[in-house]
Image (cartoon, rainbow over all chains, first blue to last red; front, side, top):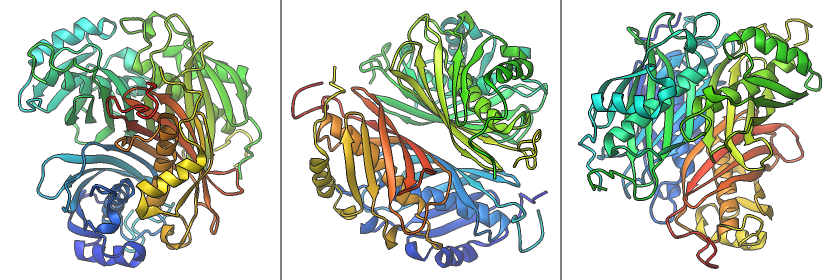
Length: 152
Length: 152
Length: 152
Length: 152
């Protein structure tokens, strides 16, 4: 049994790890908070994330939702670089506010031996209105859970 | 603008309305709580909802998620019988516990003029473990929002 | 490697098997055609599947999509009663025509060791218009693929 | 009624239009084929679309699926720049092959006055194996359908 009340990594360790494994998007994301089963992740919105009119692009929002739940799963089970996204569903609800970071609040709904599932709400910083919601599923390679500390 | 802090119907009125518009499933569902933007709905699990092994069937869980967000939307905008489900996404996470009602906690994420979106977590009564999650979208016929009180 | 060009069961065997494992919905479904990677399944629409106005209920359409891909997966890998639905996404596009069976055309997109994914289009019999689309994912228990013929 | 057998734009016009409205991703996409209700769109895979190990990133695949159905919808109704993605569901099935373009085959399932829905299969060029599937929904602003030729 996994211990669902304990983290395998801190927020600082996760920020360093994300920069290491996703060098292409270094500087895009920042883990503001990581707790057992919960995460707050920030997209530092820059010109490259925008579409005409100043709205954040769909791929940038997808990427934020994906990294959010991925980081939450790895925060629980440790560094499992082969975990892969298998399913995503997203609703785009409102235009994000121009010139603001996007804040993702993720929560873990299931952490099984083979599959992990979490969902996410995205909001513009400082606003209560939900810009998008997403649910993401990850397949965890057999025998790869918590490889560093032997807990499975 | 819709007033998103005010209900158009009480929980009792909603229970009566659901029995009226869905006579085929009368007695299956009960609104335990209805508040602005939030609802708790119960599936009174009976033999007809089960699959071999005592698990609640997928269609019964789909139906619960669907009625949950539908009742939440109508609770906000009033009786709009032509609102229709346009999209549903569901993750089935764990087997429900045998012999227990399923409790759905729904929240409204968007209530627009044309589309309403909400999400739902399903749990077996008395348990914290999430059995399934769902997100549902409804199309609201033009001009039909809040027909009874003129607010749109 | 699984042999993706060969069936583990015929359409007749599948019809008998569905009646056996889903006694609660016996008579609802009929496999019209089963081929490697493809299936045609019919919902024999009856009063119990309808909502007021004569439309087929959402749970009945969900159930049809679910059984379609489930039967297609088992048609390929053999009788694996523990395969479970883990994810479903559906778009409801048009009202089905009254008094007609619903015909589901399913195709298998992936048949892995742990996960199988297929998608489905639902139409009213005799019509080209798509009533709903769905994609379904199933988790296959470890070591349970093709239990009867040893192929995995 | 919209004429669903006729295009509002050719493939060449669509390629020019995509470059005009999405300058940030100019050169990423190419419409190989556009026909009533069907489209083939290519992601010209470059370094910026990759993740370590040479796989195409999730956001790049999301972007490809999104542009595919968007271009198909606009190919049918003409230039409606305010059409917005409201829902997306994706299954990621296999790793794309390194060093190959990704080819998206999209088909239109519904083209209504308010909502358009299509689905997409992604494959590596020259391969039959499906890398990902997606379904996308777009909201069309009221009165904006076919603005150039008055057909609605």
